[in-house]
Image (cartoon, rainbow, N blue to C red; front, side):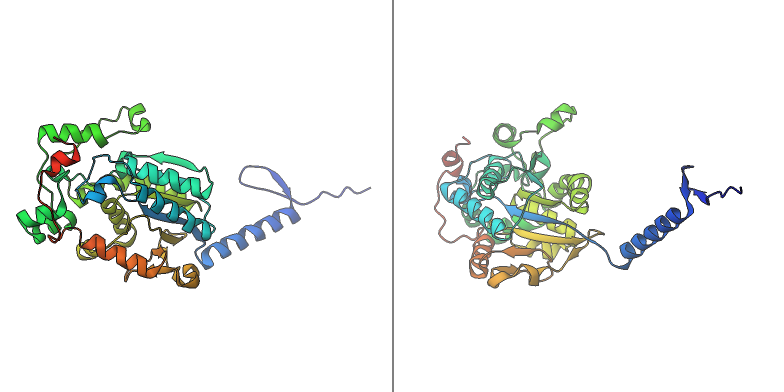
Length: 327
């Protein structure tokens, strides 16, 4: 009898494979590589939502790291944002918010509306830009005292820092709002609360969160929800879009209005307006890939109100620091 020895090959690990099986495996591997390089696979989604109205928003006060709660209207706004995401069939894998109550309460309300319980991360890196000595002051009253142009520079110019907070005010603001998350505490992270920040200062502390947590999760195909603050979300959009200073200043993000981003496998934002604009319930800002979900007229109205918050009309003089409970 003549023995027949079956043809075998060894792979890189030294394992022996029958020749036919090895051939099929090699062909399948080549096919997968070809498909992967023919077109970038879709990655996950990022949803940015500014918190609902806080008690200080209602009074028109600079808030920064101070920690006022939501108003009843703010909770309704957050519930509406959650309902919008539900209407789009969004399933959140990971949610993030700052350590300040207005974002955590907004997130809790949204998730309750969605009836979802994703992993939640709270980070001081998402805290709002620290507005220094302006904390607790009414924007319109300051516009009367210093002029609308100066107040707009404090609010929006990326490189401009407001006047630093006094030691007393800084201490009170830290007590109100600068809570460091437990993760940072376990890592013995030393955080010295700033006395003030420019928008770009605030963006720089957000960047590691984007690079090391948010972007990798989205790249893996997750839907990530970030509930944040106006200027911090502008920084997030700048990180995604590479906006100029002028575009960053002009960007208006209304309260409790979801902005949805889709990405390709290389984490480049892709156009998704046609996919998301069901029944006309979406709007897109020129030069921005993110799509704002909701009634276009209501969104434009909210953007106009936000842009006019620093104007001097209808300002009522008074001791706003005392009214805000800081003195």
